[in-house]
Image 1 (cartoon, helix red, strand yellow):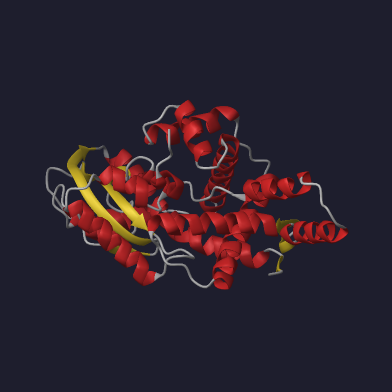
Image 2 (cartoon, rainbow, N blue to C red; image 1 turned 90 degrees about the horizontal axis):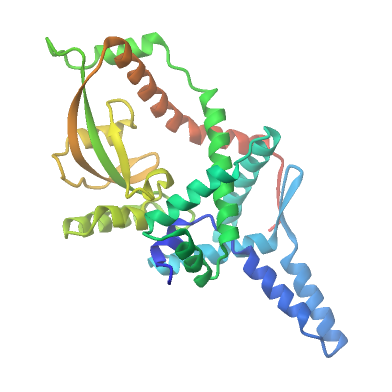
Length: 341
């Protein structure tokens, strides 16, 4: 079963380093006819295996960077995106790899791990989101030149980085009783229904700014998504193909039931103004451009105690989202990084 192009786009963190390793291995298998050929192959292998970045006590190799570059270029070709000059793209891709390496080192220092049960569940979820069994998924990724083992390794890495982020950010964000009181005081007064809170069941497509996509390209891409939805395209399918929100893309963009204060202000304001099933124009937030749809609304009867706890959690989530970018900048500045491009 052939893997659809959209899945390759969603598996954006997959490394193609193994492909380069196979190429090197093929060079070794062919018996050189001359000393010059031997020297050339040796030099070529050395160039592929040179260090392009030192990150604390670890290194990023040229072969790893080349693999990631090939992946980015393949994604851009599949999605019709424009790439910056190769030297600029290399630095942007390498910087992303440096950030990943820093977070993986933090996971190792904290003795974090992902057991096989958790990993299997996540890989199975990815397969099911593409309407495949696990065996069909394995056949599909291998048909695209990627092994299931490499997919599992990359999913494990992403899960570990998410654990690190959650642990670090939770220690940096606090919500006081005064914060909760202030939020509740700003809500419209509704006599006789103080224990009700309005929720929206929403979904979205996030188009983020990336090393291969600038502000104008991101906005244009979001506009294209909106136009396709207006033309009757399936929201879930487009979210799986185009959304850069890894937490919701595999579920068709579904965010579940969202309460006031749970999302960033720009998103919440746009969502609040939508009619049921209406698709928003692209909405800019610090995460990129969102195309939003509200599927349902409901009023939940909650006790005062549970209401306060729900408000507290919503405020915490919003602040955590805002804190993530700041934290990433800090850990980058604190790490020893030597770029050798």
